[in-house]
Amino acid sequence: MDTVYAALGDRVLVGGSGTGWDDCLLGHDIECVAAGAAEPARAFVGTADAGLQRTTGGGATWESVLDAGDRVTSATVSSQDPDMVWAGTEPSAVYRSADGGETWTERPGLTDLDTASRWSFPPRPHTHHVRWLALAPDDPAQVYAAIEAGAFIRSPDGGETWVDHPDGARRDNHTLSTHPDAPDRVYTAAGDGFALSADRGATWTHPQDGLAHRYVWGLAVHPDDPDRVVVSAASGPQSAHSTHGESYVYRWDGERWTQSMDGLPGPGGLARPVLAADPDGSFLALTNHGLFQSNRGDAWTRHDLDGGDWPSDYEQVPSGLAVI
Image (cartoon, rainbow, N blue to C red; front, side, top):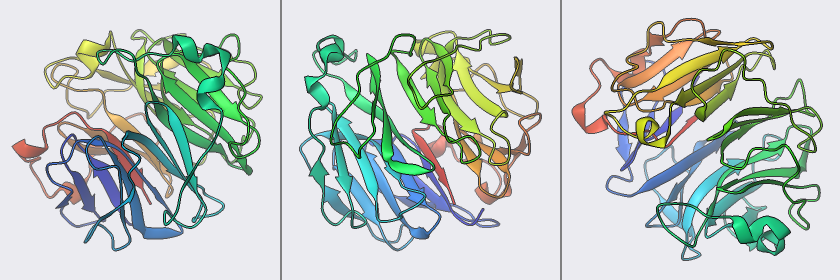
């Protein structure tokens, strides 16, 4: 890895191999972070109080590039076109930029879908949001969106039209992922369990064997193996989203889940980790106790870029992780 953007509740930490952390956007209410390998100094951070923030200098300076009066709850950068950037908001809307975040257009029709009447997100009543956005690795016009809570939806044409929630898909989706070696696959970590689609989100299976905790949040797929998956999970949202709760990490080998806590703190006092795949060939887990790395998800070690002890100011529920 060259650069890590680690989002906590009230700041974004930027670091590289062998370095410490630089605090950015201190004091903001952070929702998500996204970056692309082609432009490692450029990153996007969604906030609940200052729209979508962008840096083009590796976190040295930031500017607001999307201020629609909404919480920006998700963002992603196309792996095929680094200037193609997507953002999702609360209330649920999807925006696309074709010029690296300079200008944005809202993609139409999202809340015209039949299932939209049942979308809702507690504890804020009468609203909902786009919790995650993912793109098919071989066709960036195929867009997948996780609505929290209520639906998995997709667009085959860059957001011009949307396909409503299919039978069998999870409703409380948190994190989506795809994989270049299995471009038809979509993976989801959801409050009602893990699910996998082998046909770009049209139909779903629910591999749960060995997954004892079904409130699933974090998700990453190994960069070299589409059958190697890690998730973070808890017994429910109160336990997952608290530094005084109890959370677990599991790994999947394509057949069953195995608990993977070797080297990680917890499970007591562990808020559900945010997980990411390092393009160099490993997993990373951002926790309220530090950043941890695992080659295959079997055992974890604390990564040295945190510079030693994890400061008490960083002991927060993590909100996003981008590794490039």
